[in-house]
Length: 65
Image (cartoon, helix red, strand yellow):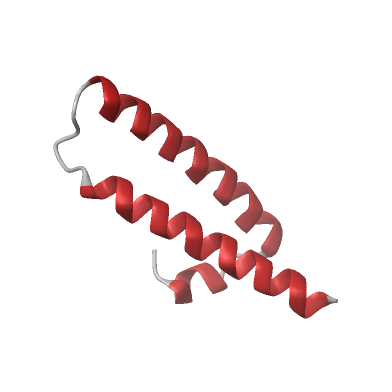
């Protein structure tokens, strides 16, 4: 997900999406430890998407103060 797409998401929905993506990431890591994924680069891509979302959420928090 691109940063431009993340900026369009409302703040409350962004927080929910972060929780959902973290759950997906945890599940993906668990599945990968049991049997390797076909494309392990998905893990890195998901981790970076979560980081982008958290960064945008933090920027919004700082701008509101």
